[in-house]
Amino acid sequence: MSKDISSKYDDELENEFSDVDLALDMDYDEKTVSKSKKFDDNFKEEFMAAFEEVPEEKPSRKKKAKKDKTPVVNPNAKKFEAANADGMTAGVYDWIRCVIFAIAIVVVCLTFVFRLVEVDGSSMDDTLNNKDKVIVTNLFYTPHDNDIVVISHGEQYDKPIIKRVIATEGQTIKLDYENDKIIVDGVVIPESYIKGTTFSNRKGDYDVPEVVPKGKIFVMGDNRLVSLDSRYKQIGLIDVNNVIGKAQVVAFPFDRIKYLY
Image 1 (cartoon, one colour):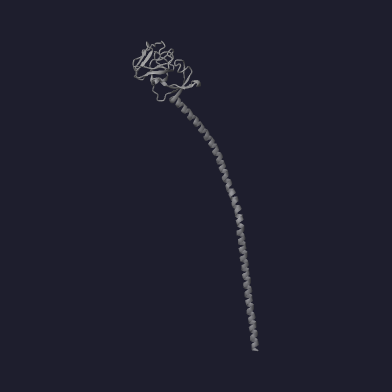
Image 2 (cartoon, rainbow, N blue to C red):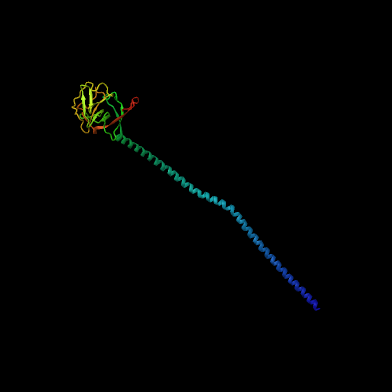
């Protein structure tokens, strides 16, 4: 009797523990499943969120880049237009400055370097003809024998003249009218350039000194028949300060362009 009761009790206890274990197992499985489900759901959400953020961020960056470029381009365009306006003004200013500079150079050259002189008359035929235009240089110029020079005026003659230098300061000079010769420093000078003869039977009225004084020159034209030169009182000896320059080249007319020496 007691064995049956004990066996019955043991069976009931075993069933009770079995039920408890089953309940525990079921509870554990539900919790595990629940947690696993939650983990899966969270992982899925996080994964999807991470996957979806990648394509969403790229367009947003591109849009931002476009928005950023727009304000940068417009100011640059305005600055470029302003630079064009300034460049045009600067170009005009540079052009005006170049013109002024060129004019200044021409003025300086015409004043101190060379001049263009027109021959008036036939006293230098055939070397120079009437209306020939001659380039004359005068920078650091000192007259020498045989130079063709332009002179501002003579002793009693107020107009510019162009003549050839026969003798300079310190040289002895003798006009030998009888033999139709000019003697400088004791030597008869050759004159292949003259038209006609040395004096062409024209004797001057000026008393020429034997030695040319300091700062003076004796000049004559190549066409001695018509030349008004240092043989006459109107011209006399020329002060070197009145020499404008030395004739170098016939520049016009074009068919007469030539170097004079």
